[in-house]
Structures are given as structure tokens and as C-alpha cells.
Amino acid sequence: MTRIRPGYHKDIADRAISIIELMKHSTGEWAGQPFHLMPWQRKPLEKFFGTLNADGTRQYRTLYEEVPRKNGKTEQGAAIATYLLVGDNEPGAQIYSCAGDRGQASLIYNAAAPMVRQSPALSDRLTIIESQKRIVYHATNSFYQVLSAEAYSKHGLNVHGNIFDELHTQPNRDLWDVMRTGSGARRQPVTMVMTTAGYDRNSIGWEIHDYACKVKDGIIEDPTFLPVIYAAPEEADWTSETVWKKCNPALGVFRKIDEMRGLCKQAQEMPAFEMTFRRLYLNQWVNSAERWMQITVWDACRVEFCADEFSGPCYAGLDLSTTTDLTALSLVFPHEDGTYSVLAYFWIPEEAMREREHKDRVPYGQWVRKGLVHATPGNVIDYDFILHDLEEKLKIYDIRELAFDRWGSQKIIYDLQKIGFEIDPKVQGRHLVQFGQGYASMSPPTKELMTLALQKNIRHDGNPVLRWNVDNIVVTQDPAGNLKPDKARATQRIDGVVAMIMALDRATRNTDSGESVYETRGVITF
Image (cartoon, rainbow, N blue to C red; front, side, top):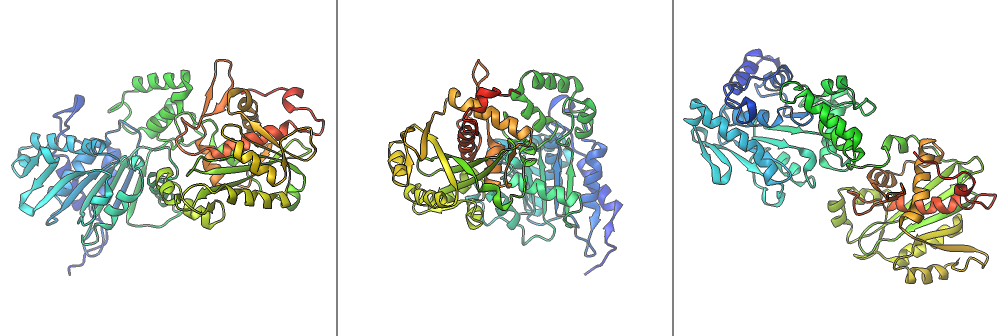
């Protein structure tokens, strides 16, 4: 085997760039013009294609490129897919563009096919099969093909190159795993991720983004992985044009500055659009489009609990699932200094857990193994199991009141009375409080939770399940400015936060003076 000097080889890089730049843009105002790479595009591609191992194969196997929308990712992906098909000298090469659905996956093909048609050199060598969204190179028995997320049908592929478009839209990790493990027979397989930021931090998109950041920052050493990330820091001023320019390398070329100004103005005037603007145009990983609390605010309230933290009275909120969902219990402990400590507990049906893991895209199995979620027997929630756990907690904590959703609560009232709770407020002992889920009941403690978090007067231990719930919370507002959590509009589960808000309401209404904090100082608005 021929040995070469490992490292960067300019001639190899120049060859790849020259073939890519033979192609032409296919859409918009640039249609028909040569595909001249901008410096920010050229530099990583030169490094990717030109850095070789001693045996002549490429050092890099993965190029992760994360840039905001409208910075030319699709056209670049099409040019690279075409290069891998005709310029890589790989016999029987299989090149795929992958995305969360066939429509998204077809965008790269829709740019690549016109590139081929506009080039006499390419159109003479390649056959476009429009009905299959496939481009064939008969000389090497190779093809490029669109592929979507139905991963169960993709086993057996022999992948030389795959272009993942908008990785954050993948419904689960199945297609990623299939494509990554489908290239073992290739000498120098290529994976290219071209994506904007997403919002789901329990997705394969976030997992690979996080990995790319750690490689970029030197935390992980992976000489086969090349990360290219253009994003505004989370703490950056998202209205600043200087910030826009740093994270939009094609601003002023593919994206017009006047368009950005208009979009930013909309985001300032319509708060619901702010998260969308920041995700798509500043490439920041935010949560739902109308996320209520910044996760950094919640994280700043994390503490190491001490032994006597939970010796005093506390107040509970119980958010029961219907059948297969998450059930949450929150305990809130008020302290004399005006702070509150929070503990959270969760349950999920054991047999339904795997399905929920795929649907919610969170590691329920791992959380169960760590004791953060309790798996109840069967495929629907086992209330007797939860009641037993709650009865055990009554032996440990001085729970004075338990708030629960009054809707459909007759059976749970009976069961809770059996373990020592009283429904009649005139009877001394632990009390049950039926808690409405409308604005009247939910708004004061919802606003109070935000106030306490901003002041770092609510304390938690960093429970990752509760953190996930906090990061998912979406609120709705009525014309009077009242707020309440909205499960229907939240992208993921918020049960732990709902339970915490109910418990917090009872804790704040039972101060030493016997008066509600809302009555003595009112609700702080923000």
C-alpha cells in the first residue's frame, strides 16, 4: 500500500473545489451563475477534502455545518452530493440526502438536478430519474437518491455519502443510526450535516450539536469530525446587527440586511415570534416558539440541598396522567427567609415507557434506572402504586396539603382519604385541595414562580426531568393579563411544572401569618 505524508494536501483540496465550482446555481437571483464558494464555505471544504491519512484516505469523515437559515446550505449540499457522485472515484457509490420527511429531503435533489442539467459535462455523464428523485452515474455504477425518515426500510444500505439536511427535524435517532452504521464497507465514507438550530434538547439533533460544540471547544478529541458552527451566544443581544453579521456569514449576499431588520422588528413587536427569530436567524437552540422561562433562569436556582432542608412543613401538588402519560408530584417547602425548596417525583407505566420514549424523545429508561422516574406495572398508570409511594412519603415529610386537579377526581379523593388526607377543611389534619386549571387558580402561582426564579428564591436540586418540564412550558394569557400553563400548546410534557405551581400556591397561601402572600403584597408582575 502506498504511503503518503499525512496532513493537508492543497492539490487534493483544489481538485474538489474546482469540480464543485463547475456547477451553477439553480434557483433565485443566482440561477445560472457559477457556484463560486464564499470564503466561509470554501475553507472548511478545503480542510475536509484535502486532509489525508497516511494511506491516502480522508482524515475527516463527518462535516457538521450549522448556520442560520438562508445562508446557502441547500445549494452547497447539492453541489457536494454531486461531487461525491462523480468526483470521488468510488465504485458503486451510494449517496443519499436525508431529512425528517421526503419533502425536506427532496430540497437538495431539487437543487442538484438543475445543476446537472445546466452543465454539459455533467448532463453527458449522469442520468436523472425524476420519478424516483435519483441521479445515476453509470460509469461507476453509482447513484444519488433522496431518503426520508422511515428508517425501518433502510437497513442493508451501503452508504458512501449521506447529506443530512436539518438534522433537528428528525423524529428520532433511527435514520441517523441506520445511515451511520450502513457505511462500514466503505473505505472513506462521508457524513455531512447541514442544519439550523432546533428547539428539542432531547433529540438526535441536539445530541450531535452538543458533540460538535465539544469537539470545537477541545473538550472531545475526534480527528475525524469537523465542526463548523455560526451561532449567536445565548446571552447576546439578539436585536444587534453586529451579532447578526457574526452568525450569518452570507448576510448581505444570500440574505438581505433589510429583510433581517424587518424580521427583527416583528419579533420585538410580537413576543411569540422572538424564539422563532432567534432559532432560525441567529441559530440559537431555543425551546418552543413561546417558551415562558429561560432555562438559564431555572438553572441559576440550583443548589446542593442540606440535611435539614426538608424538616419543616411542606405542600404538595399532584398532576395525574390519564392512562399512559407522565404523573408528577411536587413538594414545596417554605422557609422563614422567604425562599422555597422543591422536590419532584415522577411515574410512568412500564409497558408504555418505550413508546413514550420515542414519542417524547427523552430517555425515560435511563431516568428510571437512575431513580428519577418510577415505572409502574402494566401499560397504564397504576394509581395504587402511586398511592403506596405517596403513603411512604407521608412518613418522611410533613405534608400539610395536597392540591390536585378537580376534573375527574372522585376516585382519587376516596383513595387519598384512605391514606390519611381530609377533604373537609374544618377537620384538623392533612387536607386535600381541589385545584382548578383555569386562569383564576393558576395565574397567581404561575406568576409567582417566575418572580421567585428571577430572584433566585426558589431552590431545586437540578432534577433533569423537572428541568425538561420547565424548558417545555408554554403559557397562555387572557385579555386581563392572567397566565396559565398550556399543555395543548407545549411541545413536550410539563406535568412537573403544573404540579409545582399547584404546590407553590398552597405554600404561599399558608405563611406563618396565615395570610396569602398575594393578599399581603400582591402578585409581582413582569
